Image: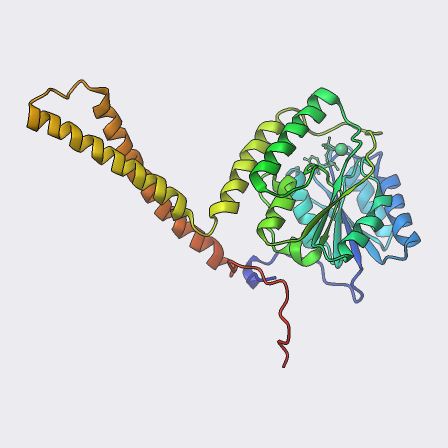
Length: 333
Ligand code: UDP
Ligand code: MG
């Protein structure tokens, strides 16, 4: 962790014994599922002898989920309820969960019982083989075909192409992380879907593992087709972050320069026509093109400079290094 005190989120004090696993669950109007979910997670963990805590984040539910969580958390020592003031969306809820989780391993899963908690120990075993992130793959996904499976196939294909993280299913919430990794990542928008890609940018070793997926038993899905568009926009952000986060001038500067040079070239050519050959150039589309290219070039170039500045602010204001260390060996000697 490398953030200054000022930007450190408020976290509950660490318990004396750090649990091995924190299960982080975003919850938005899932009141019917909560009791069974908490019971199942607790059962699985106890059965496998894993020390654990469950962090349920209520994302401004209106169906009584918050009240139920509050009550449960009072009576159970293994449950922490984080109640958000309003509905912020799944990404924010997960982020709140991460900030309040203290386990060595963080496992995320949905609050609607679509993910199966019995898969958790297998994910953790895989993590122990030396990975930083193990992502679930809903090989046999139980969701509607047209609104879910098809857009998801296309999105997964596109994300795979753009991020170069070779996994099948980015949308699966069931994932296990080493906690250091999660703390290095800042989440915005709906970027929780791109956690593997963000982790990859942070240099994580990533594995994938088929997991069970159930149809929704209670309540209804919080997303519709509109999600596809947002995924595409987030993908564009990720693409930029992956390629040029620490060197925006390399992309904006390059395109800006090319555009400016072509604009100048065309301008010179038109000048030559006018003054060398006495041709009229006032009504030529080429003139407009030259002007547009030149101005665009200037814009891109100065935009690149601004991006360089804000990139520096981004890294320096949080003491955020531009690299990630996996291990330092022999540092105490
Ligand atoms: N969720 C949330 N805030 C939201 C929307 C969803 O915390 O604004 C939670 C929701 O309660 C569930 C998870 O995110 O635990 C995934 O949502 P959902 O099951 O509706 O998505 P789907 O499985 O249909 O993709
Ligand atoms: Mg679901």
